[in-house]
Image (cartoon, rainbow, N blue to C red):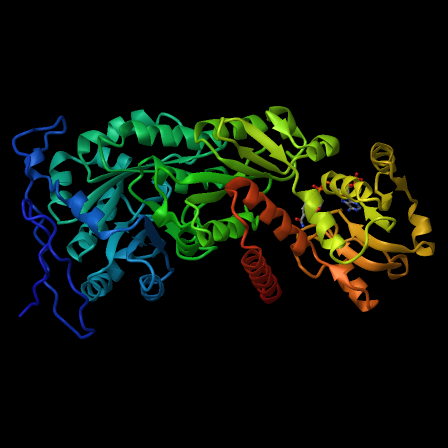
Length: 570
Ligand code: NAP
């Protein structure tokens, strides 16, 4: 005798208790799908010839009652691997998508999915078998896709996802048949090139009356996220919408979309297992970005630059927001054009920015006012939106270079060599000269060093003199030593004649310069200390609260050590 499934909710009864967690034993499962709730709406016939009375309109509510804001995509090259991945993922996430198109023969996994879901009543599952023609991996035709999805629905998947192009190809009878299999329907559309015509796409999806309409575009600019947000805000009352923009520039849509009305978003199971460009792993979305707590009043901050995909600022600042219970989220804002950023700042609106290469100088002219230091240096790394709605700039890099040194030696009269004369070099030279240090600059391009020396009342020094000159401190402000930057020897061991060495590069923590200094028995200051210090001051400017600096340091060091470990293992 077959074991009955717990009934799904029935219209008028509200939401019934979902299927309970089942003991792990072999059971014979019924072949027929669970009955879907009857529609409270009767009589309307749509342009596609379907009667709305046939539609399980309560299903969207039921699904929403079961899910959080993240659906985790499960992939795998074989049924066994996909199931293993699923077992792993559902320990932390109860809303998952089986990307059946990743399997060579998707039908083969269906009986196992059936048992899997039967034993885990808390899990809500989407079945997707996207064809190659619509951006997926399934090589079969529409009929084969439908066969897989129908079987998945009968096996207990709560939702099935078909592309708009597939839906438009189906005859009303085929659609009706698919809809009769008990699963809610997502009709999705993917644009792998751009973010445009969102309303038109939605207008094509709407007549099918799916429980969820999903529109995924590609963001080529940060402004494309605004287009997606505005679309969601405009049309959110007409349907249960899911809106995402793919790509590095679209990463933020995974948060801003939810804020604008997307019912949920998609996440990868782990970093490196993305099923869409710009997808973020579930743990980062939940724990670092606290996506479950994001609401309309969540303030949005971000680090802007190019590139910023691997910046540790989001990890550090989101942790600080969580720790200090600030309702805010901090996002990576990758762009090549400042005007693009400024549109986002205005339209979201953003409450603050950490500014990195290459915008530290360019942003100045867009600010209402800056502190005296930013003006003098010609660079600003922190922007805050004040209560008057205007943008004000600060430079926390200077304090983050000066303070760690002040803690270790008297700067007045100290002889300091600064390597580099870019943005960070300028912050170091101005900050240290202002404290009364005698600053010497060496830069690869001598002319830039001379110009900076004139501006900051410092001196320049030629490379050939370094071996014969001793300093109290050597500060590296060039990117040499940074992960991903071509390794060159900035200084030879005999050119390191100092009492203390400070390398601004923080990834890796132990740079070649830091290692060389340690080998000579010299004390060092690593770039991590500066990174956390400048971030802590930014947090204080944005929130008016003391920054949890020790915790910030802890997460950054942990992340850097993990990154170093995985590079060594690779
Ligand atoms: P930037 O404005 O581009 O300046 C780079 C400087 O490094 C220029 O003076 C450049 O010399 C020099 N340089 C570049 N490649 C070189 C090479 N191969 N050999 C010798 N000199 C080289 O960059 P930035 O904003 O100052 O940032 C520089 C580094 O500081 C970053 O890579 C980052 O690691 C570090 N930083 C760390 C923190 C922190 O919180 N720890 C904060 C800010 C910056 P030319 O004039 O000849 O091009």
